[in-house]
Length: 380
Image 1 (cartoon, helix red, strand yellow):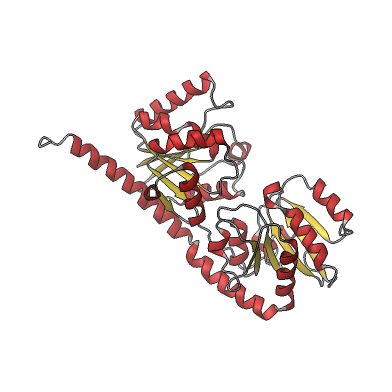
Image 2: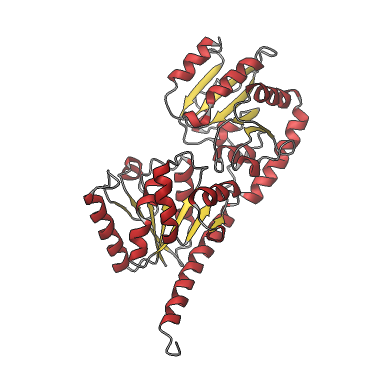
């Protein structure tokens, strides 16, 4: 079965969606499926490092230009000519633009939804609600994302299937790992509070810096480590204003995160919106107790008081308090971390993610064949 994956752009395999797409394509059983990837825009990473399947680029820059419409028609015709049965769409522009063209030419359409719709606008929602008639299935990565997709895009619940992110268990030995080079900021007799998140407003890292400032009023043996790419300038300025500059460390982007996470005493995520956080999954896998905001799929990963703590979005006092509580109660924190590791091993199993995608693809292909058989049956 030939499957085409379609997405706006591919930055690198370390971002959440790109990582899951890479794992999915790399892990598909090649005796059953032949995957390929099409991008709207070029990927410098793929150009340099390659990808586990063939990659084509449509060079779409503007969503609704005449050239874009012609490109999409040609793309759909080529897929039909090359006997593709199904296209699996990731990211926003592709899911807005592509479904109607694909469906017109008889191709099954699957889209992935992996966030709580922070990018929705009235215009985009109007198109997405129309597109629901051209979509065969939606794959959501949490029950929370399933609900928001149903409520906002009006996709029928029976068309939405939840498949949690798949994560391989990271290696347990970080010795001589390049990720720990020049990392004296991690362990130096101090407790490490860490966050893995690209620096964007939705992640609310400024809340964590403010909470860290409150925490340091009661104990000075703590430091904050922020792992992720983005403009650190405003956050560094905030740290200086709060007299925390010497205690807040920005590592920039890292390609191998688990060895760094294992140095954390508490892992934090304080986003205002999350579909299913890869950072929280990695904290839990690495045996690090978690404090996160009570939003989206975080509720499905972190059971409050059992596998970590959840706090309301923007509640800086409670965020500081729960981090401090884990630091003050290391035995309780260790029990939580152990429970968390067991939960995430079951919920976010890599093989389960792959097998459930494979079953969905095969089921859609079989239903299409069966429908075709019925239409041509002489008795009808």
